[in-house]
Length: 176
Image (cartoon, rainbow, N blue to C red):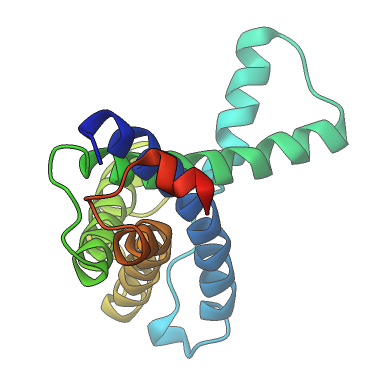
């Protein structure tokens, strides 16, 4: 597969994987709320809600309730899909050697996103407590949930690596 084909295919597969990974992450975080208190992640103000409210203030226009809720939900899936797409894009210059390789890089992506968000911009934006004020068990639960997000996001790329090795091109994928 040529590099340009790999960029298109793996980025598209990453976008899909990222959206599906977001579904998994949201379910994991909801399930985490049923864990013992020491393992529950700290509550976070919804970043999607904050983003849409900011957009409404900037535009001086409030969305109707249904549209507002849909925009918030879309923001979650867009965020997750874009990270998955970025994962796929990274494989353009470093081709996937195997399904395990893709999944391990997905796990690394999940950890990176967790650090960037939970340690970085969420506390900086005032949407979460600094990690130094959070319970270690809750941090671990949140980190592991994000790692699983990354693994799920990488599944479509891993499947492509297994079922369509590098020697086959985009035409072979489209024939499937």
